[in-house]
Length: 377
Image (cartoon, rainbow, N blue to C red; front, top):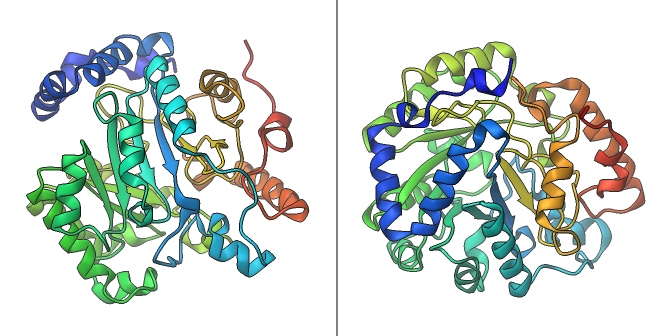
């Protein structure tokens, strides 16, 4: 099926609320509005404008979540395994300024700042200024522990657009156990109140493991989000990072089908949910790319393989390389790192091979994706 078969006319496919939000952006962030309009008008021609997800501060975090895909990148884990931190040169503010300029030229309009826990970075304010919150929408990814009224106001005053708070269960004991942090549930609920008070856009981010979508607890979470008017964003558990070896967490087609059924009835979505008339497919390269602290770009938050380093190659070249890759470029009906066992095996085999040489992820382009076929021209 062609891309055009999936698309509808932009003006007919967005809600009144989204129209209102875009009108507001036209006033407050005219450059962002310009890029959104340009991208939407050129989607049929293959235009992409992916989120750039920035992992900062060596992925430092105050929690140790059972499902975390970041643990192998963290200094605490590397010191435990090797006795020292990552020796690779880390991105600095001039590198992020260059990335922001290249992203703006490319037509990209969204940055997600994450970790670990991004609020642990003492240079976070300088980074927001460097990225330019009036040329890009700045979204903060947080576990909510430090996001109180004062921090929410600070983020809003810096030009922040949205905060995404993680909550993995409505049961406080289960959430705290999953994140190995007593009190995490209460801090997350406080963070939602603080974000609303500061006038920020919000998302509730939750990890979906096998069969959870059928539970009373999940019904309770959907009801909470409906009552508080918070969109519910769901990530499917992946057998990577701290979750490696937990194949029992991986969602089945039965889970995914139930989730798609619920999407039509509730304000819930995944990275593959159709939105604004765009195809709801696997978002590798097209929808989101993760920028590691050393500049390596991964085509998905849950993949440990790189397409190139943004401090060495132009952003446009790296994205073009990804779109030509047979696994990453084509539009797919599945989440390949969460559902496609052929790709999961390829990915994990390459990660294991690279890890025998060095503990420092991600796998370089030449050792991973470069070995796969390209999309026929």
